[in-house]
Length: 351
Image (cartoon, rainbow, N blue to C red; front, side):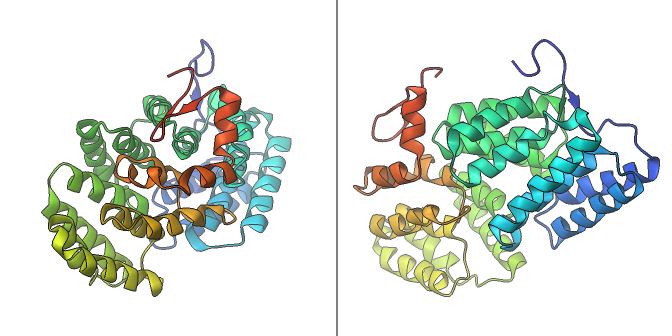
C-alpha cells in the first residue's frame, strides 16, 4: 500500500515564497522535458534560483538532487562526482525541510540502482513511495529498477500508481508505455505512447521503445519513420535504418543489416540499446552479448531492463547471459527474494 491508508500529497504542492515556487515549477517543466536540448542544465539553474529565493523550500532541493543524479546518463558527467553532489544537495534539503525526508530516499534508491545494489535500492524506493509527500519521479525510477532486475509485472504496477497521483506527467506516462511494452501488453502500451507523446515525452529510450512496439505489432513503416525522424533530430547518420529494416523483413539481407548497424556503432553514432536489439533480432547473439556486457561498466551504459524485453529472448539463452546476471548482482538479489529463473523469465514469490 502506498502511504498506508492516507492519500499521498505531491511534493509540488507546497506554499513557498511565490517567486521561488515559480522558478521551481519552471524547473520541473524543464526536468520533465529533459530529453530536449540542454533542458536538464536549465532545470538545474532554475532549481538553484528557487533555493536562492527561498533557502528553506525543500522540494527545490529534491528536484535539484534529481537533476544532478541524471547528468551522468544525459551528459556523461562523472558518475561519482554527480552522485556525491546529489546526495549533499538532498542532505541540505532535509536539514531545512524535514517534510521531504522520506521522499528524498528516491535519490538514494537511484544511486543504489546505478551501483547495482539492488536490495538497498528497493528498500529506498519503498520508503520514498510510501511517504506522506511523494515525488512522482520516484515511481518511474522504481519501475525502472524493478524492470532492470527482470521483474516486469511489478515494474508496470508500480508506475501505474504514480499515474494515479499525477496523470498528466509526461515522464510517468512515458514510463508506463515502456513498462507495458516490456510486459507485453501491446494495446495498453500503444495507448500510453499516444498519451505521453501528446504530453511532450521524447528521448532516445522513449522513441526507441515506441518504434520497437510499432514494429512488433506489424506497423513496420511507422516504426521506420519514427526511427528516421528521431535519428534526424539527433543529427546522427540515418544510413543504417533502411538496411536494418530491410533485413528484419527479409532474412536474406541479414548481413547487410548487420554491417550497417556495426558501422555506426564503431563510429559511436548510435546508442547501445539499438545495437543490442538489432544484433539480437538479426541473430548475432555473440555481438549482442558484447553490448549486454557493457552493463558491467560504472553507472549504466544503457538501461539493464532492455535485456529482459520479449525481443531479447534468444539472447537470454546465450551461455554468457546468466554469468553476466551473476556479476551484476541480479542473481543474488533474486536469491534473497526467493525468486526463480526459468531460462527466460524470473518469477518471484509475490507474482
